[in-house]
Image (cartoon, rainbow over all chains, first blue to last red; front, side, top):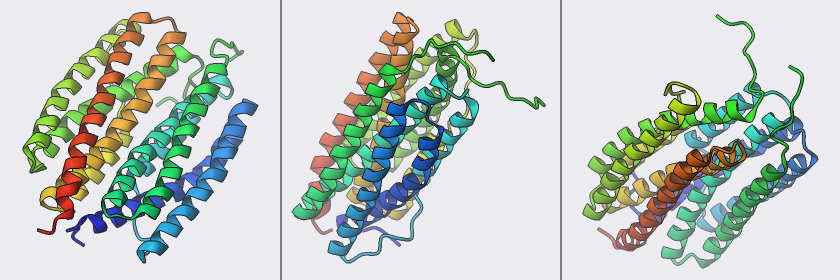
Length: 164
Length: 168
């Protein structure tokens, strides 16, 4: 299919985000399990709930547009998540794994921020104020999740020594 | 073949590992930006991609310098993420033409910028904790430049989105 107007572009990019969010809901439970710090586990759990809400918001947006959310795989998110899974395997359980997971998850957040920033602008341009508002809410939550992770990272004892 | 992969046990090792991945990412971005510049139709956008490509080459030099003094070599580690993002950008080139293609290219490059901001932010914090003040400063400079590139693209996109609304 050829994208020849901004409404089609909006739908394409929303489908991409839909696929990204769905992938994230599957990945976050693994991070919850692998986290050592309680703060981090709670942050991941909280963001998992939020992410499920983001999928629902996207459903709402697709309903307004009368479009189908399915049918696209976000290759970008697939790559971000597979690299995160790799760094989880490669780091020693404990503080280092927590740090590696935080930095992986912050990549996910930033990727989403870029995606949501674009679709929100397209929706505004199309005069779809309701859609723009829904997308803005998610964008704010992604930003807050990123800040929360920076805060948790600051509390990880990175100089902890463990017997190998 | 090593049967037991040694796990990363300290922040220094994690830092070096992520700098190596970022070096690979930046090198892929240099190639990606060249394709984007060729595919863009708006001259201001072409120029923005060209300038950011030059900046990216400086980012590479900074990463190589960091690796040379912390690890003793500047080997890279393949970044699969940027490979998949670049692939997605190329798909958009196939799917759209004209101003709409420009708008789609901007969205694709902004994903890459945000990805880089997340990585450089983490790396700068690692460098601060490790007390590599010079590294932290260089990484912060790159982080600022990525942020600036992202803002500039937002500016161009606002103008182009408007144009994309007008039927051809």
